[in-house]
Every structure is written in C-alpha cells, then in structure tokens.
Image (cartoon, rainbow, N blue to C red):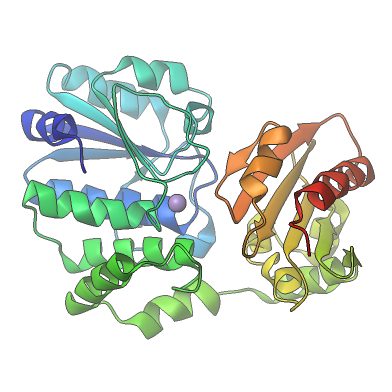
Length: 329
Ligand SMILES: [Mn+2]
C-alpha cells in the first residue's frame, strides 16, 4: 500500500522538509503539522515550509508556530543538511500548487508525494496517491503506523482536523469504515471532538456575517433548482470588512438546498483572477468539469481559475458545462 521506497527515504534521512499546497485548508495544514510531530518523535529535524502565513482561521492548530515562510531559511536548512534530507509534499495534487518556487523545491531529491486528489498530476521521485482515501490526514496516520511512530496528542489533534475537514465532519461519501476507525484512534489520544468542532465551525467574525449577507443576495438557481451559483466581488469584501479567508464554507449554503446537485461559488481574487469552486452531490462529477477549464480536484469538490474575463462571462460558461455534466433525471 505505502511504497517501500517512501519508508526507506524517511528512515535513511534525518532531516525533512514538509510542503503542502498553496492556500492550505484543514487537511493540508493538519497533515503537515501532524506529520511534523510524528517525524520529530522519530528523532528527525523537520522544516515546515508554507509560501504565505496561515489564515487566522487556523490559529488554533497545535504546532502552528512551526510555520516557516522565509525562502532563505529553507535554503539554509537544505544546505546545512544536504545528503541527509528528504522532501515530502502533502495533499498537493499538482506541482504548480507548491507555489512560485516549485522548481527549486523539486530539485532536492528524494522528493516524496503523498496525496489523495482524483485529478493528481504526477511529480516528485516517489508517490503514494490513493484517490479513495478521505484525506491526506488519514494517509499520514497510516504512514505513522508503518514507520512505527508514536502519535502524540498534538499529532492526533492535527490529523483529526485534517480528516474532519475533508470528510465534511464525516458526512461525505469518502468517509469509509477505515476513516472512522482512524478517527476513533485519534479520539483515544485525548482529542475532544466538540473542541475541534468549535474551532472549525464556531470560529467566525461578525464581518464574515456581513459578507454572507451580501453574498447570499447573489444566489441564482437554474435547471429546476439543480444548479446554484453564488458570487463574491472585491467590493463586497471591502464593504463587509471581511477577508477572502472568511469565504470558507459559504458554498455549503447553496449546496444544502435539497434539489441542488451542484453549487458553484465564483469570486474575484485580489490578483485579478476569477476563481470558481464547485461542490456536487452524488453522481455529478465536478472534477471533470473543472478539468475542462484547466483546474482539478475531487469528484464532488473541484475548482479552477480564469484571467481576463468578467465574473458574468465565467458564470455563463460554467453553467453550460454544468448542464451537460448533470446526470439524466
Ligand atoms: Mn485533502
């Protein structure tokens, strides 16, 4: 299941650099900090690199202080430990999502990749990609067992956050018996589900509510209420006093309508892109739809970015693609 080469690369090297995807979510960060603790318990020196500081929504994660965003610090760590170093990318389906310095990162081999994205594009020197896994956090747990490592409370907490995030708190179809077994083991380490739930879901600012009010006014439903769109402009962000990070979870409002099979959130980004997030239920495969637009993701959760078009143009094009993707009723 886990390639032997990965276990060897980790056993043989005493220094580890951990990466995840840009704009990291709970699975990305939980896997990163969870694996950092696990590797440290094996006596490794671990460097957790992120291109940007983490969203304030994740301040509660244990080990969040390990975050290093300075490229010069990364270079120093790599130079000081060359020949005794392994790089590991977590939850990253595409090397572009390693960020602006991906070429430099990928040169440091061995480069291990652990991921569960359906649209995964191969990179690195050795890969463990299982698209049936609920989350990368679940895979990191299996890796810890295979390495014979101890799972501390902090590691358990981070892995539990990772699994909660990617399973929608154990609601999505990716939740398997093994997922629940692992979650059970993590609770056995002292993690309190109500505490994690509070941090993940009751952790918002009043400004987020202002933004939600503005965004909900944009809801449109089409194709017998099966397709829902919401949109977010930079003007709404400014007016509400919220941040882009506050958008997390907004797409669940249209998705939660009984008849809706696909929900789409279209937003203007700060760097002049139009970004589209797609969330589906059941048989509708939005990973394939996102692929048509140069993006990727999972069957029920995918996305992509556009430049040089208006929000309204993107909305129309995506709607046409979704109508085709909707299964026959
Ligand atoms: Mn994930």
